[in-house]
Image (cartoon, rainbow, N blue to C red; front, top):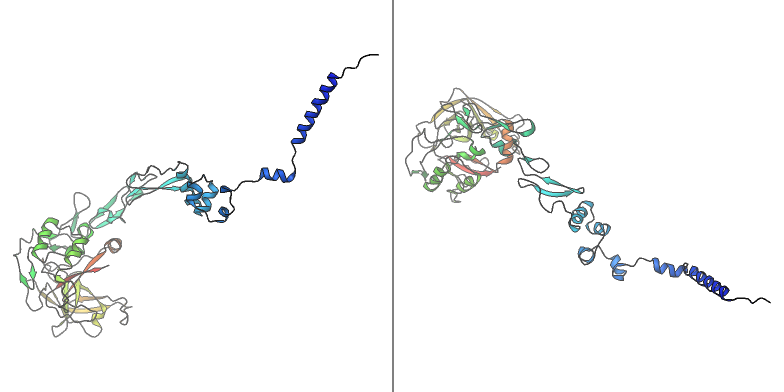
Amino acid sequence: MARISFGPTLIFLICCFIIFSHSLSVFMKKEKANQVLRIQKRANTFLEEILPGNLERECREEQCSFEEAKEIFKSKEKTMEFWFDYKNSNPCKENTCNNGGICKVKHYTYSCTCPPRYGGNQCEIEKFECWYKNGDCWQYCQDTEHSRRVICSCEAGYTLSEDGKGCTPSDRFPCGLIKRSTRSYERGRVIQSETNAHENMTNWNQTLSWASSGWLNLTAEIEDDMEKLEGNFTEEDLLRWSNINSTDEEKTRIIGGSFCRPGACPWQVLIQNNRDYGFCGGSLISSQWVLTAAHCFDNIIPHHVTVGDFDKHQRERDEQKVRVRRHWRHPQYNSQNYNNDIALVQLTSDVIFTQNVLPICLPRPSLANVLIEGVAHGIVSGWGATHAKEWLNGTECLLSGCPS
């Protein structure tokens, strides 16, 4: 009988058992599989998930995802700004904007917020536009295509300077020309003597301060400052000068007012009744027309006006009296709330223009808007009324600053 060999058979059985046992280990029970697939919560605590998002805890102490950062910042824009910096890919990490532009992250990239007068993607283009400081023009400004430059022009009676921005007088008596002088008044007393009139004329609106350019020096100290300024007056000068002679004890004066010496307010008009009593002030806008307030004529009819006057009790050299032909109040003037409180007075004859008698310049609407929006303070002048409807009790013409 043949002998049976069990060696190969035993080896075959052992291999089958090993293969079968490994195949069983691939599959797990449901409970055990859930333990393997479960996402472990950060810090292994359920309380952290119900707490509000915290930048320090979630993104500084640990690595956070974009979704976690979004939960903290609540907006996509702020999240993107943080995420660029968090991943060290902030395009505004180094400011690429020129001329003082501010770099801001916007929609996965950046944009530049440019200062006035600059444009382009990186604020590299210099722009010239009338809305910003009137385009550096002394008087009128006109925009051009693509904002490459502006065109400056001047009021009648002035010519454009060689620099294309300034305006110099071309007529003998153009509107708004103020005589500069070293004459000072302190309580009506002359401090210094007047200098040559031709050498002391200043433009009506240098550096866009045509209203404040009427603020000439009224004390020796301020006059020294004027010589340094050479006619270029600023809002700071206006505020500083408006404090001269601002005593509360003089209730009949314009509050904070200073003496408006002859020639400093050449457009100032005193409107008077038939008894020669001055009851309102006005501004000369041409040789025959005066601009004033409508409430002046609520109860009084104007008879004549006086121009070139400084002290109502003294006769000045250039003082002129002219009869009134007619006056018109704004058709929508309301005497209850003083809406549309404006009026025009027509004279019977022309006033004679001198250094102390000149009309004020009325700007075109475009320049008027720039002045109203850009100049923080203006000036008022008159003979001392401090409240609405109060009679003019002061004797000398005064100036005072006022907010726009």
